[in-house]
Amino acid sequence: MTGSALIERLIMTDLTALTLSDALDGLNSKEFSSEEITTSFIQAIEAANPSLNAYVVQTPEKAISMAKASDERRAKGEAGLLDGAPLGIKDLFCTEGVRTTACSHILGEFTPPYESTVTANLWREGAVMLGKLNMDEFAMGSSNETSYYGDVINPWRRNDGGNAKLTPGGSSGGSASAVAADLCLAATASDTGGSIRQPASFTGTVGIKPTYGRASRFGMVAFASSLDQAGPIAKSVKDAALMLNVMCSHDQKDSTSLKVEQPDWTKAVGEPVKGMKIGVPKEYRVDGMPEEIEKLWQQGIDWLKEAGCEIVDVSLPHTKYALPAYYIVAPAEASSNLARYDGMRYGLREDGGNLTEIYQNTRADGFGAEVKRRLMIGTYVLSAGYYDAYYLKAQKVRTKILQDFKNVFEEVDALLTPTCPSSAFALGERNDDPIAMYLNDVFTVTANLAGLPGISVPVAQDSQGLPMGLQVIGKALDESACLRVAAQLETSSGFNAKPGKWW
Amino acid sequence: MSVTKQDVQKVARLARIALPEDQAEPMTQELNNILNWIEQLAEVDVDGVEAMTSVVETSLPMREDVITDGGIQDKVLANAPRSEDGFFVVPKVVE
Image (cartoon, rainbow over all chains, first blue to last red; front, side):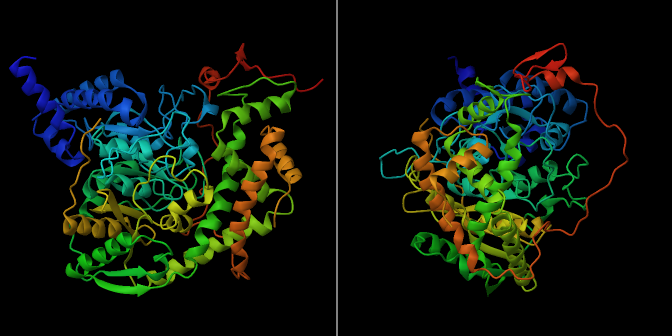
């Protein structure tokens, strides 16, 4: 390599380490072009993906052509809010002409002839697509181990020298791993029970799930329709706000999409938190929670106090029922949504002696073990005679959980909790017991059931050197409060650790 | 409430998922573990409580009853496992 080529190479490598906001500043001030930063990301993905398996589809040619078009727009002074920024897209979002399978075998080589609203919003503002990101099959999982395309590896490793492969969390494991390893500036993700916030916590990244209905579900592969919500995983709170601004919109193609005013969420970042009332729910102190998580939480409380917040002890008495209610509602809705995979119009079709056998063989072969388990649970709780006892009961418990939140939000502006009961665990460590895996979502699932916005922000590393996040839950439609408090935690903690590059 | 192997086989049929005989027993075990765990919801008193529909007060939007999409036969068929002359080709359904 000649001297100038080496320097160029170093510059290109560094570009991937930028935050989305800084990269957009660099593009605006013409320090580098979109083609340059996109090329750096393509090279970084090529080098890292064999080790991390974050991307299941790479679209380098599409990325370069989108980047060139962006550079032309910028030269003409027509740049959009994310113009030229290379992003990764969770494989749950339909992308026109690019394979989308929600990492399930049953979708085969499904190539959508249409674009999801969330991704269309991103492209309209000039963003560049690097490829599709790995995930748990149909977003059912908390460790990215249910993907048909293999496990995603967390770029973080324990500091014990053992180099055990850790999970990046799930279901948005590919999104979290890619953002943490600088394989995109930011990524789309989705959250049905914690699938944005838990992986963000496991990878030292920021993830926000907005209020249910803020982001359109059109073109998102459905898991549980009353819980699914799109949101970003990003490198900073400001980046998350910027992504959220573009991803969310009212959409006629999704009848649950809210027709409400959408503020500029970046304005909430950096706004002083002085005088805010922050609730600390006692029920989030669960049995067997590691002392480190407890300490982290207390540290968060102290930071917010120092910043002028008033801390209020609150009670959300139905918290313990959230996960069991979730494991009725989500599988029930999944069993209905996934009935569409019959092998007739798209995706996999297996042989069989008659039509019923074809359905049964297609679905037995196309779905993985966890998906089948949930479809069985869902079919059972919706079957004749059980609907009232299970599904209706769970929906009523949801009302109680929402009421708990409404009660405390009369008194406080936001809630502070840990994001997860642990830091990232090793692959294969929690596969024996589905319920142990489900417990990962114990702190995040309540916000899905109640439809509330929640954000995870990294604030510390545990004794193993792994990142840990705190969660801020806000009132319905008050993403601004979440972002405001999260930004304060980001500042107070000064967290800026990155995983050592071993890949 | 717990399920038997026969219940599980029935549910598998309803879900249209082939369940080989040797997998029925382990699946029964797994489902019972999950269902037993879910049972704790019985403790919650939900008398007079409405089932939750939406977190934000909202009513289903209405739109003009006009055609908004269509005329994309090629796109509709593009991902079909089998298609012919503008139709999906499916297994024989009626004898």
